[in-house]
Amino acid sequence: MTDPSSSLPDLHHEAAVLAGALPYLRRYAGDTIVVKYGGHAWVTRNWR
Image 1: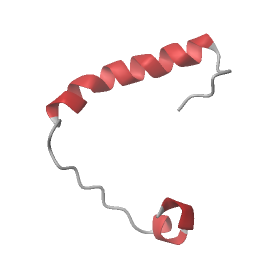
Image 2 (image 1 turned 30 degrees about the vertical axis):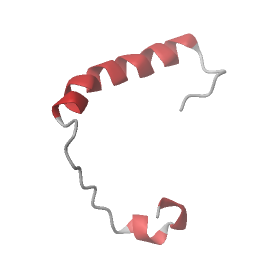
Image 3 (image 1 turned 90 degrees about the vertical axis):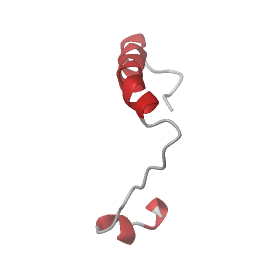
Image 4 (image 1 turned 135 degrees about the vertical axis):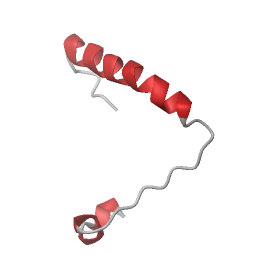
C-alpha cells in the first residue's frame, strides 16, 4: 500500500495503474491463477 505521506501525483499515478488493470482483473475474476516461482525466490526466506 502507499505511504499516506506520498505526494498527490504519486497517488494519481497509482490510481491510473489500478484503473488500467481493471479490465484484466475482470477478465480473470473467479478463475484460479497459478504463480510459479523459483530461483532466487527460494533463497530469500521472506518471499516464501
